[in-house]
Figure 1: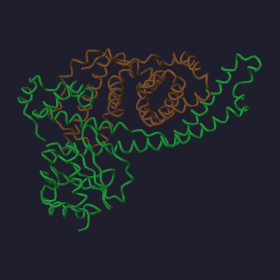
Figure 2 (figure 1 turned 90 degrees about the vertical axis):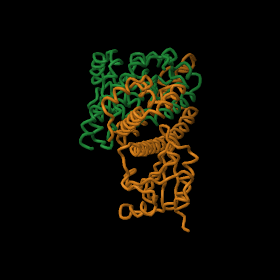
Figure 3 (figure 1 turned 135 degrees about the vertical axis):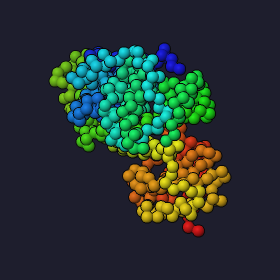
Length: 211
Length: 293
């Protein structure tokens, strides 16, 4: 079903600690022509600004705070523009910048705490127990209650919610989510699966009330 | 809602053709290669249980997408961001003459490149043009983003409502194949009126099933339910004057066709998985029915 070997690999790691390295490389090609740099930053804005609202929304889900979300997006744009030379045209820009967003988030205090939780809870055994959950075929959830869904999303474990939002809200492919989260594609699938199963469980009492 | 009995359910689960949770997720996320997708579609054509599961999963996905789009940036945040980007790209660019010119001994390496840039119109000129271009670009991209965001959520809402009508538990508020029953039912429920085509004026094998009063984009709307060759079709009618300017909806979403038409008074949006040509015919007959005789 999925060929892990064929996944595209971004050549430059975008961990913040590596950014100074990419910045040093940047000067070489653009030093030839100053207008090239202008063009490049125009290209960057053309690609990045339409994603501003998406990045902000995602940042808000990560930080759970309006001003931290804005700071996070600002820092993401700064880093992304600085590292734009390392972006390979033709690859997925959205995945690239979401990866920077996430790596930037991981350097914040909230992000460090979240990363610790992920490490403890993200055990690879989760792929196998999917069959034992409640089977969804006998229920068609009433999803017209937006508030219930908001509450359910808030109750999801952050790393499950993160994967689910990248998939459902941002419509990013599994292979790119794997790059953003820096986990194997199987983990992405199991997180999405667990997230949906948990959402169903959380929404089930709602079903009893509304029918 | 129809609950399959417990024994039925476990027997069904023994069938190796049934979708595993992982496959189901990959299917609704559009992650499967065409061959596997086709196999599943064949299975779904005969398996009620799996079809319900797929439907239910698609509903949850659509609802998550809407609920997940929750936090809009403060209005001035984009301005702050672009200001920051401008100054950043300015300072990045201004470093370039320095790095290029540094090896030439006749130019003093300091003061900084920023001053060179200001004193030399050659650098300022492209900068001014680029700034202007970038400002226009920003305005355009902001506009496209707004429209895209709006249409995406509208498309999600339309699809969501259409999927809801597919569920066996959803019975229309008015069940009738007779246009003379369906149309008057909306009297006093909608702030506008519309005409329904006569059964003979409908395209072949197209039947009116009933109707619902619904809300679309916070506007009251008539939801007409048709079938074309057993495919369910949802037709949303809204008042054109009060609906905000709609940009073009995507032609398809999650495999369903979205078709829009307008008359002087109404906006008609059709959602279905029937082939687009048949859907066009039905929409055309509705548009035709609105014309004064």
